[in-house]
Image 1 (cartoon, one colour):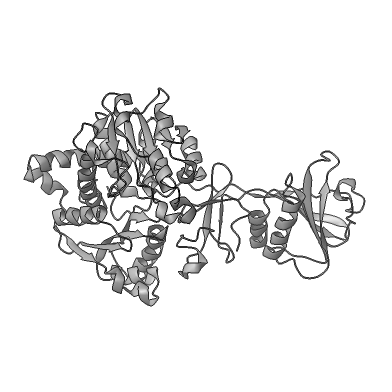
Image 2 (tube, one colour):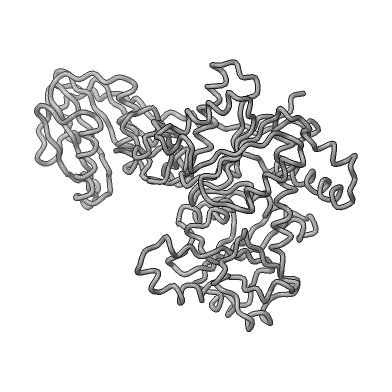
Length: 530
């Protein structure tokens, strides 16, 4: 039986299923006990012990703990460790990420550990380098581990956090009540918890941050979709004024320097809302633990140093656990362990629902069919009519989006027009209509394009005064393979400003919006066109 972990990348925490993570944590527990007991026989079961197994650390953003944790994990494995000097690297000479990492993959490097300000880097490299390996007969497909990308995710930090929560839960995964405190807007470690904490059957999350540092709506909505109970509080003072207080608190460092002068003028006020004070201790439940991804701010720590030598200190053991978890992760990717995994293999479910529905054209002529004639619009003998555009939106919004449809569909030449109308059934509900006279032929790709830019519309193709083809469009499950798509997150690897040539790709979310396949930024279908 093949080892399903071999060669796997970890771009986001959900790249490992719940069953796979539980297996990883069970193995980490065994390894930690063996290292503490100096049980060399058990430790050797985890070691890659192959000097030709190359690990490359590429830290394009400052790091101490994550970098050194991985470096010491690699030393445990007795594997080759290399380090890309970011300051003098080819990135500064204008070379693309794909070219750089494909070259390094050709030098028999098996795992790349990457920290970058660009979001979605590991997902893109996983795809691109897989094709490179196939083209060039590289037997061991390179794997990519996200060690933090912008304000997107930090999946290996999430692994060590989950392991520590389980450890402090007596290895029970039935429930978790966790307070997230601090900068929840920029904090990639708390963003990873949106999906990561699904490892617990029942989750209650208390978000403690002023509005300027609040959890982004897309992550908060995702938590609710995952079945979490989510509450929000402006400050620790407000949180402790009620009775239902978590016994596990996870603090992050406020990154106010990234938010402009107006925020910096209020930094003392904002920091005070998420900084623990001595007078709070007596209001905590018994056996409360504090955690922090570290480092703490030297001058303004949200967990002050007077708490270091108290039972609240869970962050030091949490940090130590990072090396154990990363040792096991590398063991899995190398295929050293994992053959006895009995859970369900990760499968990517692909939604292939039809979103362009052919309807039966009416037997009436377009000129006599009453409902096809809107106020101010005369029927056409030959051409196309796109109806029901942005139904229910405001007229000004409909007009703006019709301009985009015209541009995206290449309908801005020749005769025709646009109109805002209401139906007789819903006089207060507006909709847009685009009509273009003249013979028109639309390919399947044109129809896909129309569905992507004008979901919910109806397309009528008219010949000789009759509707000969009629289609109703719905939101596609995926939108991709169009040159004029773009993620609007400027930090995303696929954003055109970076010149990486990464084709934009979007997946429909549960609330009928679209998440970028690389950085996870959520858009409406109207927001993804250049």
